[in-house]
Image 1 (cartoon, rainbow, N blue to C red):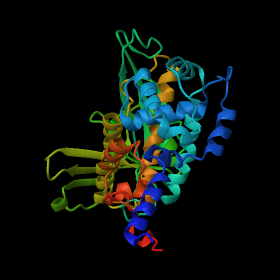
Image 2 (tube, rainbow, N blue to C red; image 1 turned 180 degrees about the vertical axis):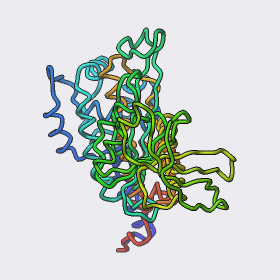
Image 3 (tube, rainbow, N blue to C red; image 1 turned 180 degrees about the horizontal axis):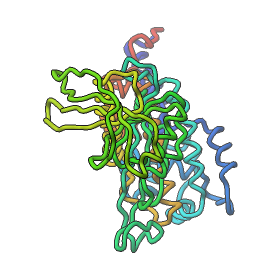
Length: 398
């Protein structure tokens, strides 16, 4: 009769044998039937006999998670791990097939997939840290430099190419709820005007979105904004409210624009708030159409706008959106939208698990264990590997 220790070890080895790779478990957050339905909606051109849109997604997702820099690197890595990835349903990729798909298969598939993943994340997202119930967004754009001779479609300046990533970051879960990718020369505010923010929401944005006509439109729609007033703005003070200078506040005023053009574009009364940062000593003049929140809350809302800057910094440092494995517009947009999908998968993992680890810590763990056969949540929790043994509560004694 076999000893309990031997049976425990056998059971443990069997459990490990049936555990899929970390990459496989990550891809389960994208239901295959939903992906294939979206792929049918966004199909053009001929179908490749030896590759599919799912194979493309698996390859480029792996590249984002593992930091692969070229088509050859992606294909060679997948080939080397083929014995671990057979259960993914991904056909073998060649460099030429992957290149042709990136060039010709519509990137809109991954834009639509991003929308589906966003909906899942939104259901788990906690409320933002402010006491008010309004939805809070930070709106900003970040330029991604490109070589004009290699990417001639990305016209920006005479000798420089670029694309621009526009994001409306929802502070509930810090999710990129509004995303648009344009050529670098497109002005930030032109995209801001196209975003359909919900009524009653608050948008924090910098002076790059200064447009007096848009301020009027937002006010008419019942959408609040917090921005900085331009230094050359012409206005008159209608009324003043008392402020606590001990909290860094210098003024809280109701104003009307008096400039010949600005008074026509924005005849609405707005609120002007002066604030000095206690740490840096920098002085700010804020402009808002919200008269109910306290002056200090308005200042804190603008300070919280830094979260969208942190978002751009994170994706540029941790995902592949600055160097590209293709040169056409479709290939570049495909890579960026898949990067955005990977960000949402990581966000979903963090929201679902309730882990205190940062997303960067999570990504580092995934990168070093991507092809290991371990339980995904156990890896993220930091559970020790027990020499192939399962959790003590799962052991079976015969």
